[in-house]
Image 1: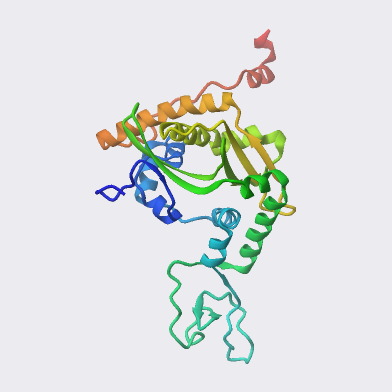
Image 2: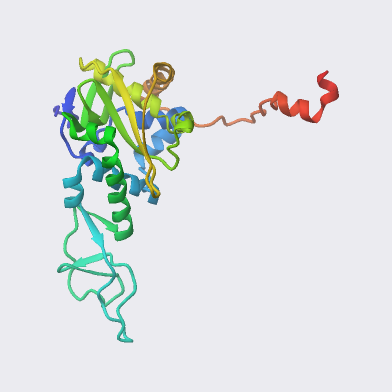
Length: 299
């Protein structure tokens, strides 16, 4: 780490929480800047949003796949409240307080002792815990994914580099770094191979791949392929592995150049512009719609 608390250029083996605390340019920040606005990017830097259920499941599955031992150590499975109600029945509520190895809800009197400290743990409902494990198992049943995960690879590698073109300090966290392959695990609602281009466009994963490959290059590490391991969150948890082809990477690099130019300017000026303030005219309607409605004018 440098004297100001930021990490030195290079690769680091650190917890995800430490990585996310580094205030550096990242693929996720550039994705928001390019697809929404610089204003929203700055807002999310200053006020990180709470995770949605889908995001929480993705995070849990991600850790179960890449750090199975850490997953078992860090996640506490919440059970049903152990208290007995005034009617003599067991409370039906989901437990959220952990006391002496048992779960209790927050109704007054149900937990008759101080809760055990759960700092450093993530409390997860049993249903979500089982889903995360089912997703993990599906990935490891895929022969190519299993080979990547069980081979001579490094996982959850945090890297920091200097982009000299824009004068930006950047960070990235690599799921899997093999000899000549960079791989990223994504939980995707629809992993069908025929709709991979839709996934790439919507997620910006091609930009992330280009960003990470650029970072590895800046650190003197040449990687030949960038792959995505896509797994669906619903049974039977289909798994597909696709590489990101060069034309997608070219598009990603072009978009990153624009995004990083704007990001650097925002840092320099302290101004993070949002959407236009004035009245903006609509775009022209598509030609097919004009032909449909006014065929006589299109002769």
